Length: 149
Image (cartoon, rainbow, N blue to C red):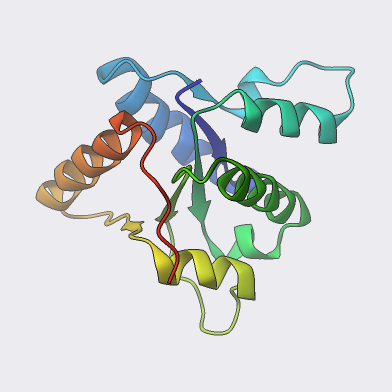
């Protein structure tokens, strides 16, 4: 996969109607989307770890629901472990909905503070075009080293 997509279930409509259409159908990226790609009948933790390992990058779709979800936190921690193990910049953070102050964990805050992230803008066509171009560029870049402060 080009990227594993980590999101709260409530954001699946955006993943299906925006992200998958733009990145897979229009730009030919291969995404690992849990609600579509996870096989049934297996241990979820193992599937998540394996899927993140098989993906070059992980896209974190950050929303207030994401930061409250234990599964999203687990996916973030697995992606962060991959970042530390490989030394490559494998996490792409997208702020899909505004995050209330104080709701972000310390480790997620560190990632957001140390690297660029994208913000989704709903009602601006030019901003959306720039968003998709930057996200595509980030997916295309391979083996960028993670720079810690």
